[in-house]
Length: 81
Image 1 (tube, rainbow, N blue to C red):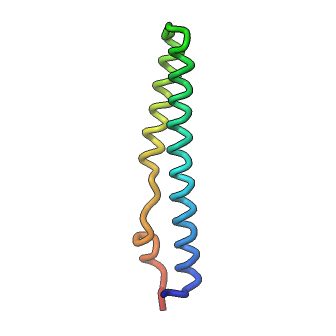
Image 2 (cartoon, one colour):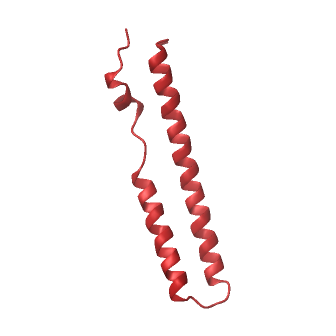
Image 3 (cartoon, rainbow, N blue to C red):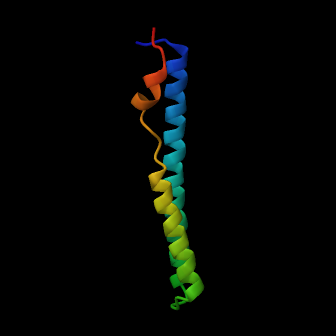
């Protein structure tokens, strides 16, 4: 078991970043689903509805590309002596 404080801090920060990223994914999925249901509820899809859905989908894909780096990459510069 490694008791280096800087490694433990990096481990905590990596877990926090992963948690925030996963929370963001679920939030974007909820938002896109909610917007889709609201757009299709009246049976008519307007240009504004399409723009909102495409924008939300673009931000969701962008969020997916912001996946945090792994702990191995973060801990390369940390001295574990």
